Amino acid sequence: MKYFTLLLLLYTYTLCAQNKRENFSIDPSEQTVPGSLYNSIEFKDLRRDTTYLGVVQVGLMNAKARVVAKNPLQEQFNVLMASLAGSDAKQGKLLLTFRRFTFMERTTATKETGFFFVRADLYESNNDEYRWISTLDTIVQFNAMDVTQKLLRKGENLITSFLKENLTKTPSSPRAYSLHETSRIDSIQKSDLAVYTTTQFTPGLYPTYESFRDQKPTITDFRTEEKKNSLKAVFIPVNETGGLKKIDPDDYYAVVHNNTTYVATKAGYYPLEKIGEDFYYTGIIKSFRAGTAMMFGLLTAVIIGPKKDPTQFRMDHINGSFLYNGRVKDDDD
Image (cartoon, rainbow, N blue to C red; front, side, top):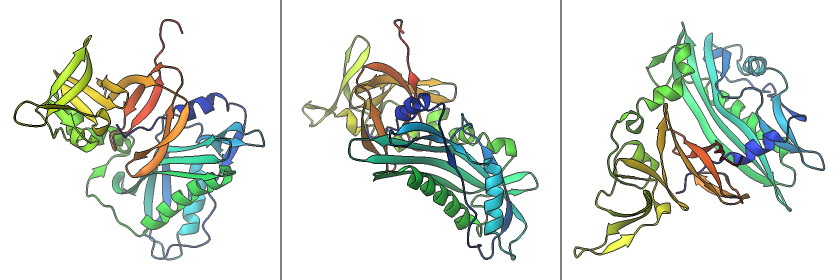
């Protein structure tokens, strides 16, 4: 299973960064955008926790510090927009929303690694109707001896470039949303996906999130080995005489068998459960060594822990990655 975005490291750092602060700011642009269709912007932060923008490490001792906006983000975007819109700018209005906007750092003996996660949507605002223009959905990762300021500037530059590139663009979709609907865009997107709307999952093996999302398994003829009501192994035919081959679960995204859906991972198969409008599974974290994994073509942190703690993960509906959702407490906690 190759899609993991475990933000356990960020969660741990946040607990240690309650007192120190590092300011994030967006400077005005030195150049205007000729022919801008817009000259004003509205901002909405849709993240679950809007009080901070991540955690970085500051000082010689690499103390953890919460990243906070130097000034309210709406004020910063107003200033940025005023600097981008030239004298020939039209009177259009934009809506910018953040679904994800997080800075994070990891330190080893020889280097620091910075991560920046962002998912932002841009809409044209017209008479209380909002039409989608573009989405910025990416992860930045780089190494340096001291990454903090470079990391914050990379985040700033990405957002500024995102706005610049879209100031001369009209909406990409004719569909209009209300302001309330833009804040529920995750729910609206899920309502268009087969995996979120079906009441009966199609039995089979799914090699990718896309195949699982669309409920189109590539293999439906397979055998299983089960123990104590748990899926232990999956086998597929290799010839017409009944020969079977055990699959590597890391080559698959999910397995649906006997009305149960399993997430396929290197550590085994874990039942996937729908709670509300989201999918979750509870798995095991094995070590605290941080590595890297591919996520829709971009690198992100994979945090694996030394204690075998049951941990819950939530499925991202856009790319199928799994986000850390918290440790599952046992009776000894």
